[in-house]
View 1: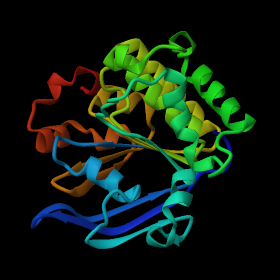
View 2: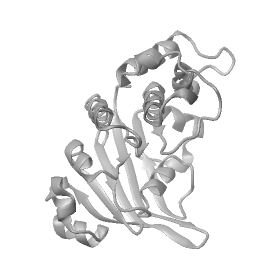
View 3: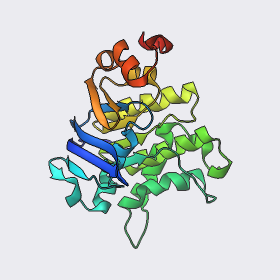
Length: 251
């Protein structure tokens, strides 16, 4: 998962579900290889923005362009080879070994008739090593803890080898050590040139691992910049409705 990252240009993005506005007038630009974290309270529109970027839903207003090309003009198969995704909550209903789940990330690259080749197997092995889950090889994912499953999903996205990786709460269910390991991995991917866009609720971790935060509230971008500015005490109070002293790492 190396090479030139993807540029993203979101302009005036709007999204509504059943008459309820979820996103309104969202502008966001990511340079190739940039690492950005979306923060904000529940219902702010963070996950909805990711869904628009990955074409799980179509916006009702505005535009999205990848490397200057309208998202709507990119075939879904090509998009799957370009953007790797780590979803939030995922059910794994079937009995599958860890390496088989990680191998699902290679489907966009596989030949439709011959299936996975040597390069696909090598990408799966490399992803497992990079995420540090060698010890889970051969295990049934249904027998894993929620945190271990999350690491497997991260490895699946790494195996997908996109020029951009999009993550919705990648540290959910992880203990502190694994949270730090995953976020450190994202920093290394960004250093390798991969564009990173993640959603996090843990503000201290977001502030530590990302030099740029985008704060959403009620479907709008209310701040975009360095953590010290975006998470200023007055803004924490206004957006989250809590005393900033309850977030000691930001006080």
